[in-house]
Amino acid sequence: MNKKGFSLMEMLTVVIIVGLLSSIALPQYRKIMEKGRFTKAQVMAKSLHDSCERLMEEYGVENYTDLPPMKQTITALDVVGPDVLPVGFTLLNMQRISGKGFGYYLVGNCNVYIQKIEGNYKAKFLFTGEEFTCEDIDTDACNVYGLD
Image (cartoon, one colour):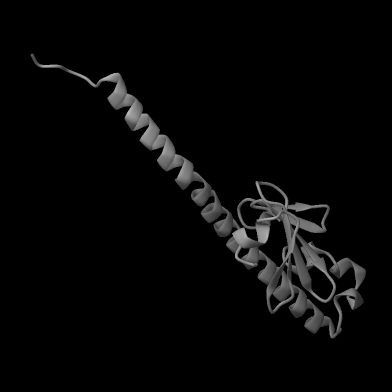
């Protein structure tokens, strides 16, 4: 007698194996995606920092706060308007760029704060022109982004 199809036990075994594999792979996939988004955030922060330094050099000032007030905005530093921003980025209140789950602020002497504004992890990062440092808000965030 030829039987066709699968038994209930065979089906349950396959479902359990697929469930176990996905429960292991899904968190790793999320971490990899977060690291990719943070890499984009690092590129944006470096761009803002470099733009700020070029503007300070152009005006011959030593500190970002010595720039004329109308030049102390992100629009004056990096973009002419929202149309020039990379795809997926927006300009908020002429002071902050938001995109890909992060917000970007210029502080101090052309330092750039990156704040995670959506997703599973809550963290703040500071780019000083030399390195990125993590101000951990979430217990695992610095590790996820490779800044432990």
